[in-house]
Image (cartoon, rainbow, N blue to C red; front, side, top):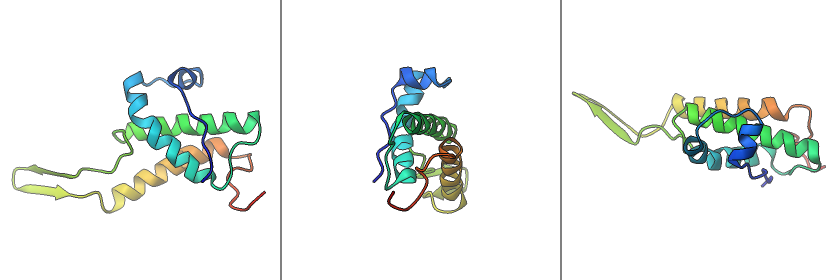
Length: 119
């Protein structure tokens, strides 16, 4: 799988990130994994691509946090009165993935990292 650059909280804030450190820490793992999957089979080849990957991870951190953090998977189950829901199937999971992909791709456009061929 493509290798996303590890993003520290300090670097995240240098890139303009505004989340609290605890919120960042809850989302950075899922964000890094998502970006690694997006750039597969590549990794950043130079400083410009490393920065693009860092920006993509930062954007995905913000996106994941907006969805509730920690690789949002939706509610396991919950009840309100006689109404109950369980699982994370359906449109919400697809919307999360689409939002994460859009956040990552906006930062990776102009690099060769989105190509799905061996360079």
